[in-house]
Length: 369
Image 1 (tube, rainbow, N blue to C red):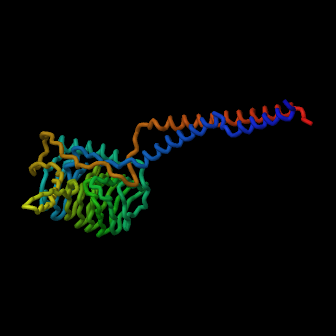
Image 2: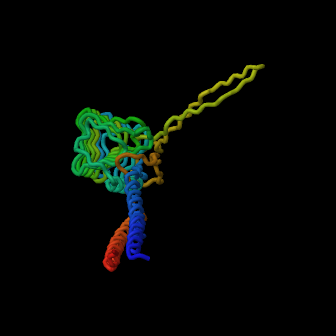
Image 3: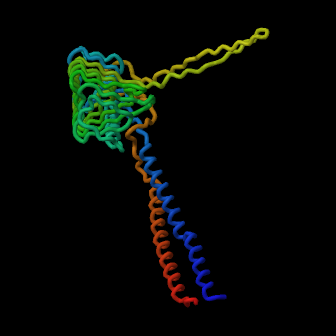
């Protein structure tokens, strides 16, 4: 063996080792991939979380619910229950008309509805993630989700709620203080959006301007005022204050599902001729209505009847509900990330020791002549 052949073999071995990645480097890359996938999946699940409907419980059958007083002026028409608790004064009926439902004043039904309203109000107020919106919604088109203003919400003109073809699409609006609409303003529903799945959580009081055409359930901490001619396809539910009406109409909404069309084929053979006839069959689902009771006025406890909660399943959009529990992907992702860092450090240290060893072996080799 010549003196020059040994360094050549060592150099070849070093080149061979250089083309073979150390095991720590491979583990570091694998751990990084696991961390990225885990954390990425966590982010995806949060972004895709659907906005679910707000459960109103026994408050669902009430078109008007207040805490102190209910006052009406003019020929208002209320389609749904009227409730007051703990107050006792309901005035203005007649001339106001309750076309369906009952009136419950300071009884167990009204008290239970107020309790369920508080639960629904707190649920709506806590919904996340949300999209921050400017104070005035006029002129905007919104998809299903949760929308928040830390101060007030207002409506001048029209706001369009686009359900994206999903009849169960849910819209939740969170107003830090007041909700007001300018005269003649309107909420427009399109592409499957339904009044039964629109909720307005108001931090203080709500006021709808004259001839406003409003949609959704208003849940106000304090009071609700409807100016002359304003109409609501939804509910006016006030926790602690009054509901004041002036020649208005309020109708508890119902949820319905989309119409589906199926086809059936009939084949007829006559001699050598075969004829196939396709007949379309259209099936329309029956809207889900809110259960009401015969129109009466009572101030004593009666048998508790639970109104039907509007139907609806999650709809997707900007917002959605955030799960209260922690995802298992969080510890997996961060654990994998830590392992990636550790294996990367070990790979660097191993490479440094290998280079130092290669240099030492080279310096020990005598020069060949």
